[in-house]
Amino acid sequence: MNTLLSRPYTGKADLRSMIALTQALRASGQMIYPIAADLYEELAETDVQVTARLWEDEGGRLVGFAYVNRYQNLVDAFVVEKFTPAIESELIDWVVSAARRRNQEIGQSLTLAASALESDLSRLAFLERSGFEYQVESSILMSRSLNLPIPDPQLPLGFIIRPMGGEAEIDAYVALHRAAFGTEIMTVEYRRTIISAPDYIPELDLVAVAPDGNLAAFCVCQIFPDDSPRAGGLKEGWTDPLGTHPAYQRLGLATALLLTGMRLLKARGMDTAILGTSSINLAMQHTARSVGYQDASNTLWYSRSVD
Image 1 (tube, rainbow, N blue to C red):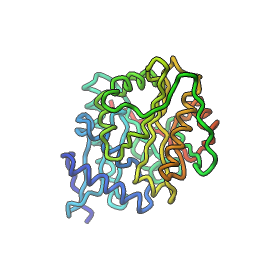
Image 2 (cartoon, one colour):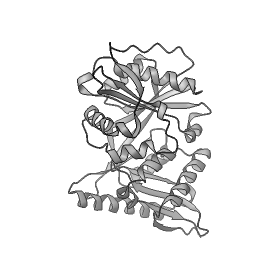
Image 3 (cartoon, rainbow, N blue to C red):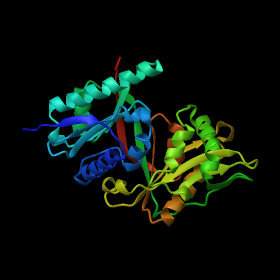
Image 4 (cartoon, rainbow, N blue to C red):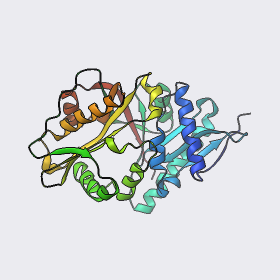
């Protein structure tokens, strides 16, 4: 009999087990998000921890988990063979309830979002039978071979590109991020979690600095060891997220940051640079394509009301 027991998230030991599960599932060919860095960053937040639930078999082995991240997105991973329709329903009921409680706490009516690669037919079917509805906007993954020539970055007179200044520059970085994206989703606490993550590489966390010393743009380049199964043996590095303060847009800073990031990734032995952007962010797509990025995959988004 396939009997699974579920329980709340209890701390770092669970985090390690969740990372190990996602790595094992990816190694077996399952298309699994999130990676270790996502889990580390998201489960550092108490508001996310309280939404997390783990499912274990009779031997106490973790076979699945789910939580609602800070963006009100469903994050889950599970051994498909272990999750019967009844357990799937239990998972969905849990995250819907967790999202509803969060809405009540913050006084909003946010929907619960979920995503799947358009090629992952099994997950698409899971979302549809779980009451999620297809959304038009999608997330495009773009890639660029680092074995091709990388042009020299060109910066406006007086601007420089350098690594972000660590703890001392967190406040300035958060202000830049909020201005670039027009949201307050980035906080000092969340940025501090990012720079303390095990796979964080300070030298790849880039900022463009204006002649007056103000931070004008940023590009967080990253290398994640557990990306490799998805990469098909290639060594990939991210040039994402990328953003520019409105006061410094259309100066070529994003292009210069991408080229600088690509060169740094190549120097660390990477074969390919990748980034993600929205299907409606035509400006980012144009900038990426101008330096050789091409569409690699498409992630579809779904949503479900929880109120």
